[in-house]
Length: 196
Image 1 (cartoon, helix red, strand yellow):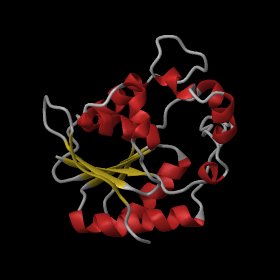
Image 2 (cartoon, helix red, strand yellow; image 1 turned 90 degrees about the horizontal axis):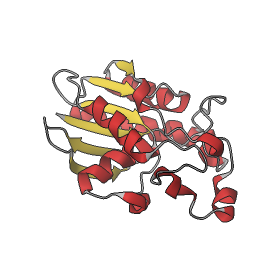
Image 3 (cartoon, one colour; image 1 turned 90 degrees about the vertical axis):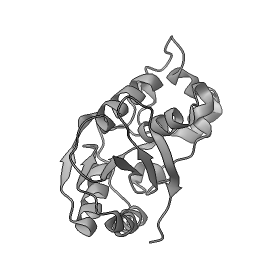
Image 4 (cartoon, one colour; image 1 turned 45 degrees about the vertical axis):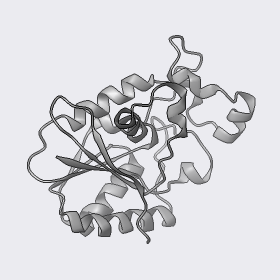
């Protein structure tokens, strides 16, 4: 099965340089984000997806709905596709926070936790559990977020630890992976960004 992993289009929190606080804020797509999602939908129309599975978070659902409008594929909401739980970082300005603690991201990988961030392996496990399910015939589209998509790409590339942070996943981009039983995902393409 081929899964097309789509990072949601640009949202309000991206423009404001905020770590998302999805428990308390519903960040919507910007006009740029809507154009990115529409362009992704037009590109994905060519591959004829049979299903779109999306994170329940507003910016991801809006992206999925725009892709559905272009492709005609139905949308199913899946909790496991949410962004990483960010603990004490939720809602903070990430540029300011990175100046105060340039190594904040090691919290994803350390055994101890300073900020209460969800561990990277937990993110990867829930993504792989979604991708490993039988979603029916034909390719699927999976609309998610930066860290969940990055976790799948890092597994396909065999990258672990803090170096996974070097993997860039752009808003509105499409990353294609092949999913095979009892095997790690195989990367087909990374960060395809259709032109709006």
